[in-house]
Image 1 (cartoon, rainbow, N blue to C red):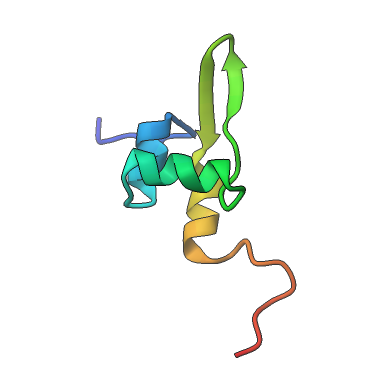
Image 2: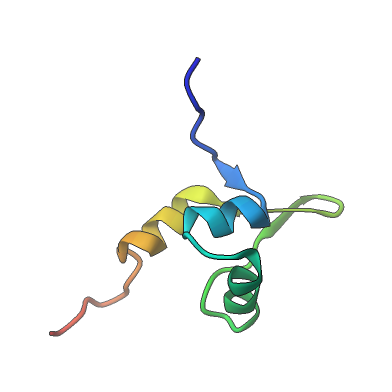
Length: 67
């Protein structure tokens, strides 16, 4: 079986999906530039990997961009 594509990502994996250091990812989450993770079990926080991919592609922009 090949490498699986994650549905949910840990903080470290989420940072890797966006090609950044976990500390930089954490800072962007804390400042509201990236979404917060969801606690899926007590003490277990995960990010929606597809949502992160959407943000990374720029497809999450609401209302479009005027160049």
